[in-house]
Structures are given as structure tokens and as C-alpha cells.
Image (cartoon, rainbow, N blue to C red; front, side, top):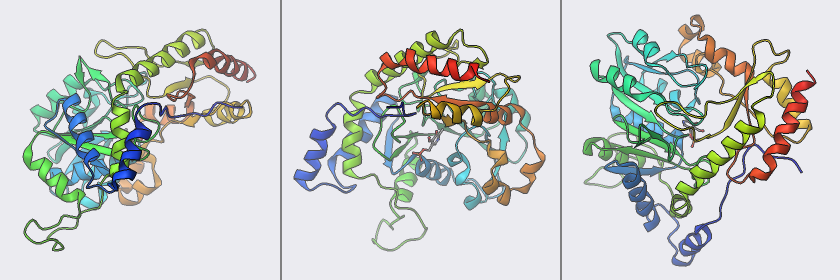
Length: 373
Ligand SMILES: Cc1ncc(COP(=O)(O)O)c(C=O)c1O
């Protein structure tokens, strides 16, 4: 038997709450678990309100919809992240300006953002990548100085903190994803969080097809059906009850790999902590040294033959064919760190369902495979 890159852990009240959905007939988004889950997350994070949606990608769409930036505005965002961060931009007539990332934390840096700001810049999206948050203080100070709106993408940082304050509480709007590789899951799902009533109202309006307030089935704008079902929320609420435990489990997995892989040659390991946060190891990323005689794809194939599941790093957004069609000017930019780690990086089994007793075995196999190159 091999080791998949992710295995969720579903061992709390999930079955009980799901059974309640079935037995009561509340299966749609109208059911009571949706509000329970929204309220629990908002309170935990310290936001006024949370709006449960169908995915992190949908949450990002609604976040950009809610900001109502004028077409032609520029949005600064990391290149080293998932495409979802940029998916909403073409439809809203917004232009992405991608910045590179720190080679060790993989997060966007304030100095790069400062260099990308001009008179058309209206917003910045900050995504926390792979388990350590971005260094928010200088980023938020820059945004305040230039009156930029801020979206915090905390999809990978549920339960993480920045200088003791929950990720998902920063900026004008924040989002989470509950895909099964996240710290808590609803199968598919996401959440948008904000404090300003006007933003919340617009997010709820756009989530539910933008029904006219006076007359249902009249629409003055085109919204989306991004409503989370009661069944997803039931799962999410049960998972929420285990969030501190889940964060601790991920840290245990991360620390066990740190120890088991520390002397392995040819790779660099993630940073266990910075001065503002302790890693929660959303995934356990490895980056091959520049002079390693193979790229990530080759090493991943060799590990696959040994039963070790892996996944590629993100592919830089400024090199995405789908985005180049909308923004051909991206072909002219070069963001060397994002480009290099996309070729040299991959991550290894670290799902919540991975029993840490297997980590020495997995690590030994990784060491053996790397030695063969
Ligand atoms: C940083 C980040 N943002 C957004 C998303 C999108 O979330 P979803 O897969 O729920 O659409 C992900 C997914 O992994 C992510 O890593």
C-alpha cells in the first residue's frame, strides 16, 4: 500500500450531523447548519460575519465582485498561488499585476508590492502559501498608505495566526477553502468573511443569484448560485469542532518530517517558524537544490514508483496560458523565484489522515530515491 499525498480525517460528529440533515429533510442551503457554521467561523476568526459558499474559488469571485473596483483598475497579487486568485479578474475588467515570492516562505513580499504600485492600483490580494502566513504588517501598511483594498486569501491558513491574530481576519475581505486537503473540510466549500455591512450584504446578494429585494425572480444584476448546502455545513461544523486538534496534528506531521529529513542532501525543507508565526504545514513542501541533477517532475515519477504520492508546486500565474490569452503583456515579465520553485518544488504526503508512525518510512524512501540521481 502506498501513501497518498492527502487523506482527510473525518472522526468527529460528521456522521451524526449529516444524519440529522437527512432525517430532518434539511439538505439545501436553507438548513440550520449553514448559519451555525458561518457564526462559528466568524466568531473564531474575529470577523463580524462569514458567508458560506461552494468553494474557495467562488469565495474569491464574490470577494472581487463585492469590492466593485472600476474596470481598468490594477490588482497586485502573487504569481505563486492557485489560478483561483486571478480567475475573477478578466470578467470584471481588472488587470492583474503579479509579484514574485520569498524563496523560503513562498509568500509575497512588501518590497515587491511597493515596486508594483502605480496610479491605477486599487487592490492587493495576499495569499498565505503552504503553511506560513505572509508578513502582513508591512503589506497592510503599504495598502493603507496607498488606499488599496485588501483581500486576504487564507484558504491554506485556517487556524493559523499572524502575530497571535487569526488568519482570515485581515484586510477588507478574507476567504477560506474547505477542500479535503484543508485544515477543515466540507468536501467542496469555501467562505467569505468581512466586517463592513455593505460588503456582507453584497456578498450575500451575489451568492444567491442577486435576487431583487422587493420581487424574487427579478434580477438587476447577474449573480451566482454559490450557496453551500446544509450537508456541507453539517460536515464543516463537525470539522470546526476539531480545528485546534487538526492544526496540532499537522504541526506534528511537519515536525516529524523536519526531523526525519533534516540531513537529506539535495533538498531544502520548509521553515518551521518565522518571528510572526509557527508553520502549520498546510502541505510539506520540498525544493530540490539548483544543482540537483533532475527536476521535480522526474523525482516525483520516481517517488510514485515507490508508492509515495506527491503533487507539483503551483505553476506561476504570469505563465498560465489561460491568463496570457487575456493579458498578453504577461509574456514580458519574469519572476525568477516563482519560475524556479515551480520546476524544483513538490510536496509529499501530509494529510490529516496520515499516521505519523509512517513518516520515518516515507522519509527513508525519499532519501533513497534522491540518492539515485
Ligand atoms: C491559496 C488558495 N486560494 C484558493 C483556493 C481555491 O479553493 P477551492 O479549491 O476550494 O476552490 C486554493 C485551493 O487550494 C488555494 O490554495
